[in-house]
Image (cartoon, rainbow, N blue to C red; front, side, top):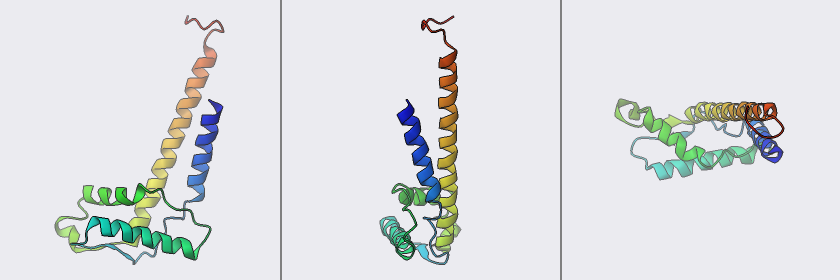
Length: 132
């Protein structure tokens, strides 16, 4: 069980150190009406790769982040209706991914609390393993 906790702590340390990896130029075009989503995803990956090349200390966002960004934009109707008239830019990606990292971090903290509570409850059990 300790190896799982260590892995979790290392995972969240990695996420914390990659906090600035998502930053791309705020004015970069990420998507505009009529652009296929697959092209937009590849373009966004390219913008992030470009940012990482200019700063070698940056870490790459998790691969699921790119399609998830567009799913979330679609869920909030950012890519349909009158909102589709306005292109999605790097600023929206930067803002969204910062929130994504915070959600990941919060999930990790909740997991750690759950593990600690489970271990504390197990420690309170009688040594013979029988429930009171």
